[in-house]
Image (cartoon, rainbow, N blue to C red; front, side, top):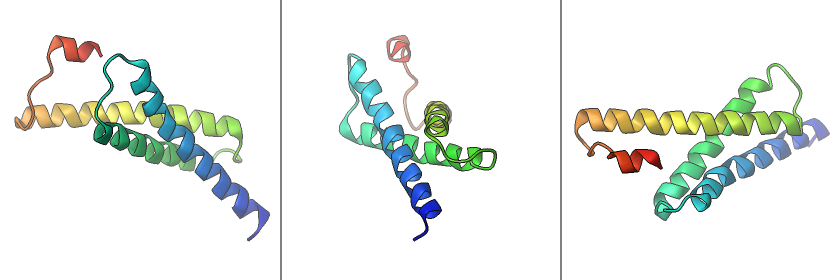
Length: 106
């Protein structure tokens, strides 16, 4: 395997791990942590969205640690947006109850 391909896969692996840790750290920092299924779902979603952001950023720059950090940040923003959109969609369909003001503060 060429060195360039090896570096690419190392960058992808590092990004997925770092991006997956962000939701876990966020849950630990809040008072009421979600159950393990929600936490695992958020971690996987954030990791995948971080890798997607990195794939888009690689069109403009070579892989670097700074680029991984930017991709993790974009992945976190994307995860929050996807989660918010999904909640609004499910509330509109009536499949879940609307959030109370106490839940929205979290």
